[in-house]
Amino acid sequence: EVQLVESGGGLVQPGGSLRLSCAGSGFSFSSYAMIWVRQAPGKGLEWVSAISGSAGSTYYADSVKGRFTISRDNSKNTLFLQMNSLNAEDTAVYYCAKDPKRSWPAEYFQHWGLGTPVTVSP
Amino acid sequence: EIVMTQSPATLSMSPGERATLSCRASQNVNSNLAWYQHKPGQAPRLLIYGASTRATGIPARFSGSGSGTEFTLTISSLQSEDFAVYYCQQYNNWPPLTFGGGTKVESK
Image (cartoon, rainbow over all chains, first blue to last red; front, side):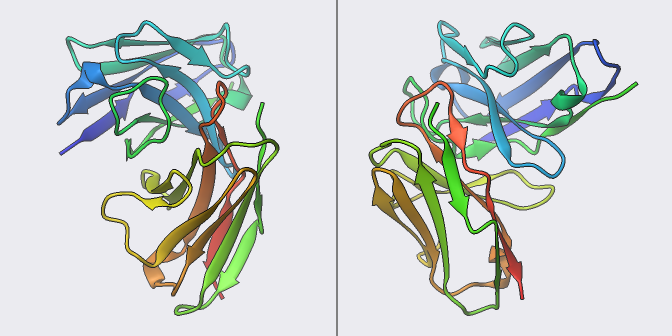
């Protein structure tokens, strides 16, 4: 059974940093592209970043480019999102997700975690 | 950037009724469109990909149609567990991957 479990969220002051993790199990982690998606309070889903299975390709939303870095450790079946220079607009639940196909670029996402909340507040 | 627009924002329905949700793309996305269901505190659930193909385990009451810029998700007979927020997502041309703003299907 495919499982994705996010962790690392919490309360951080504006300008601070957080590192989110997403542990994958039940599939060949290195074979699949992964993404981060967030949902701000009362808002819809917003794509944040994507990474290919080999980590050779990465993409970012304009809203986080230059502040967030996506990476993965395929030896540990873990996806990361390093978030720097956080501001109130980054307050959201952050989800990781995977494409069901071993392809790049990723397309649609069948497996999701339950999310980890991030709150940016003084 | 391809902008996805969903309508209506809220749909008030009763169990057993037919629900029709719309998604419009600002430019042609061919059939590269997915639909998701999302309930509070849960992971989003993939319903449809390729505009009309049901994902594994999705009941037949969910169907998708359309291509190009106009898409529809139909729930043929609403069940109590179907009250949720529904999102469309295009993957024809990205980055960025883009989602619609969502349609909330609520109980009347």
